[in-house]
Image 1 (cartoon, rainbow, N blue to C red):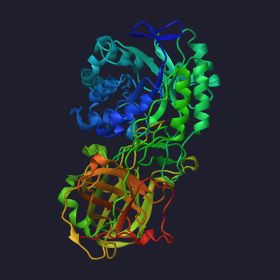
Image 2 (image 1 turned 180 degrees about the horizontal axis):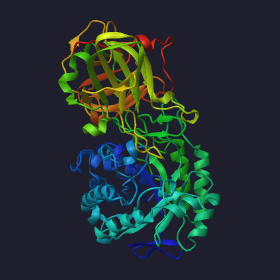
Image 3 (image 1 turned 90 degrees about the vertical axis):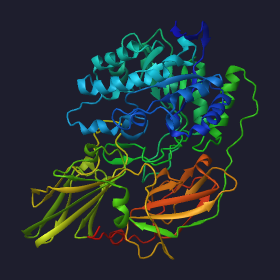
Image 4 (image 1 turned 45 degrees about the horizontal axis):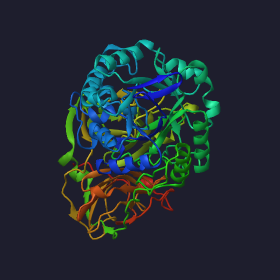
Length: 608
């Protein structure tokens, strides 16, 4: 058993130093789990920690998936084979810079739901999810001969609320489902957060990124006879679009803080040891004064890079940990193999206006709703309507626009809303207004909306995507055709060849090209010359790109490659070149074209 007693941890009766690192199985391809875990152990860590993302296991309401990329049991067993112990953090809320903090998007179709509270509807779905999850991992607990030594209840709840009934209800679900390992809560280091998010008689751990001697002060006072643990030692940080790459603390700082942990005989968990990638549309967002979605890479400035390479942070931390434990410095597992492939000409094109009905889910909707109402989790949604009338000059108003909207009137682009431009501190809102010229007859409105990451932390968790309401002259507009485009994988569409595939194109558009990879290795695709969109490799959605930076490249793990490969790029605004190249390492920085003419980039035709 794994217990805490007299201020220390004991594993099967022997004192245990908790030296842990975070790897999220859902951010790393299964083919690389063993490699990353070996490198974690080689740094001198004895435990791996992972969140569990509810929204990858129950993407569709009532349909549970625990295989393939999301085989949590296999991940835990992989750690066991290497002699590593595991800490599991099931949530149901995880934050993690992950879309909606790990909650499945379908929860938001219920207007009356109250997240993170002891409210019956929410708790019904939480209980059902946890019961399925625990069926997968119950027998992997240390008490049953497995390697799971502890599980977390909720996550940083003291930064959100103080519903002790809710936390107790979660704990009871754990215990009623055979979870008998050590339970703990995890919060920011202040007494306020720790008090609000804790459970009576259960271990509290504190999260912070620097100066353990100072940051443990409140935890020591509130919990004097239990071990000190930093549940998330933030050795790096995340990066949002439009910002700069953020590596967090330097390697020497991290090594210095590690020495403080060891001197205090405190446990710690590197957050992150290895960050991985927000493949597809899985990245989250924050929203304080401004909405700031996260980039596709979750490199995090971690000791092990997004693609599994060692860093100075890794090597200096390894020296400290090996010295503290008297471990020999053995040869490290090999570095990843990276390749540069030949440039790819994108010679085939499919304009969205011509192919949308080949792959979208199309429905009629009397009222206009956000995408969650239609059962859509991610991607793009197109709202279209036609109506007749006699109107003077007036205004077209869109409400609750999340997040990027392109508005067309009779086939012409009339406006582009970018939620990132809204300053909430100065009273900005998600309402978008454009002037509408007088008309007498039939008018057509098309609104294409891209959903960026759902907010994963703070007060704006109820981040429904799409548009909430549309008015002309303060009159609500009804009777819409709604087309949902989740694009979890590359859509099945017909392409046509074009000699110069960047000219005379009506955007948005898909571009396709092919390349050969006789020797496989990890690589990065360079999106210089493209504006905004996403990339598919052999049908797999690598993630978003955006020329506001700072991420110019997207990571392609070698298991996604075949000898003959297909690249599909969905470009929303404009391509400035008709080929892509590859690099061995990521490139950061904005890559805006020298002359922006975004108002002339898009056209939309009335005919579908």
